[in-house]
Amino acid sequence: MPVQSKPRVLLIEDTVPLAKLYIEFLRGEPLEVVHVTRGGDALAKVEERAPDAVVLDLKLPDMEGLDVLRRLRERDPGVSIVIITAHGSIDIAVEAMRLGAFDFIVKPFNADRLNLTLRNALERRTLTRMVEGYRKDLDRDRFYGFIGGSAEMQAVYRTIESVASSRANVFITGESGTGKEVAAQAIHRASPRRSQPFIALNCAAIPKDLLESEIFGHVKGAFTGASGDRPGAAVLANGGTLFLDEICEMPIDLQSKLLRFVQTGTVVPVGSGQEERVDVRFVAASNRDPLAEVQAGRFREDLYYRLHVIPLALPPLRDRGEDVVQIARVFLTDYAREEGKTITGFAPEVETRLRAYDWPGNVRQLQNVVRNVVVLHDGPQVTAAMLPPQLAAPLPVAPRASAAHAATPASLAGDDNSVPPLWRMEKDLILRALRLCGDDVPRAALMLEISPSTVYRKLQQWRNAGEGAP
Ligand SMILES: Nc1ncnc2c1ncn2[C@@H]1O[C@H](COP(=O)(O)OP(=O)(O)OP(=O)(O)O)[C@@H](O)[C@H]1O
View 1 (tube, helix red, strand yellow):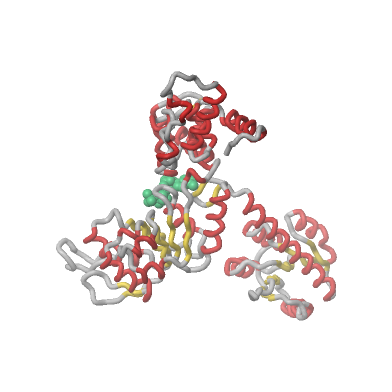
View 2 (cartoon, rainbow, N blue to C red; view 1 turned 120 degrees about the vertical axis):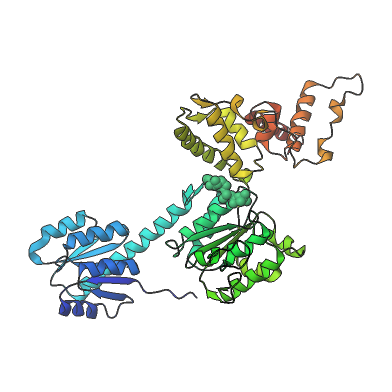
């Protein structure tokens, strides 16, 4: 069973004998009580670790109690704060409640009163956290640099959130343009390393003979042109995150040096015999299947297991449902503002085409398409005529369809003089379009130049009539 840490209560009370008495009152409770005598110390303490509840005496030597309350609430609006007040200062207690204090207790009070109020405060805290958790899970359509509220992306956001606080290495896979670098940055920004550097290195973009020095650095004279010492990405990322993009493209001999670095946490700059210790969290990415690369002998198995501790797979854009339209709308607004254009939305037909298209270049391709449209056109709406050819033309034969599926049905072959009934032709055509599109109704509808609802209606009719329909 996981060990649950005790709720932490911050007691802010400048009169030490009173503080001792309150701590004594709470002795039997499963709590961790941290005591400070000054408002400034309290604000410093919450930076170290957020308390679950605060007991605050409003009379403090260094700050106004209400100011401390305000600052604590600004930092964490969910924290439950119990105010201790003297008999004659009920007005201030009321003001504190208005500012968001959970409850107040009037001096002198006994152990039962303090215990009961704190228990309630902690219970409220637990409930707020639960609600925050549910809300976060349900309606997140933005997450660090990501846009998109699909179920597929919610799973990605949850994984990033749960791995961010550990230092376990993460291996991100996904087709080109799916947002692997956005994910790496999100891991860094959600982690305790967020104030330290995030260094990205694209192993495919750097010439092979320079890659080692780019990662590990070099000393003066290490090779022709090395006119001074230069730190590598590993040292620059010290304390933070090192993102190794396109890791499968790394030459095999360099992979063994990287393995040593991952295992020992030390680097040796090119031309130096001196080891340097660095503390980095590794995030690697590839648009290839890393295990297949291991099997093909192009990627070291031991390195794979060191880096592939937490796998994170980014889904292709075509599998993210409405995200494509949602992302396109945000790009459209941003680019129209940047380019000083007045376009504010997409015509319904354009949105259908955005949904139906395959997006082999994923979000990067979507970005380019929207940017091109905005640069080249203006008007209140993006129309189909403004789209680039691959989106404007009738859809090409879907790559998912097999040659067997693409064969012309007998009823349409026209190899004799008979004319089949129109309903039969219609059904054959719709079923053929569906086969070609892997049963994707919006795509099939686009090919047939009819609305998806017509296709759904026909399918339902055939099913009701007991005729075969997918
Ligand atoms: N869900 C998203 N919402 C908004 N922008 C996104 C999203 N995913 C990716 N992008 C943007 O798309 C572009 C491509 O993303 P990124 O470079 O992270 O992809 P990648 O998978 O690393 O690509 P490659 O494999 O080619 O290196 C970037 O400009 C990024 O900001």
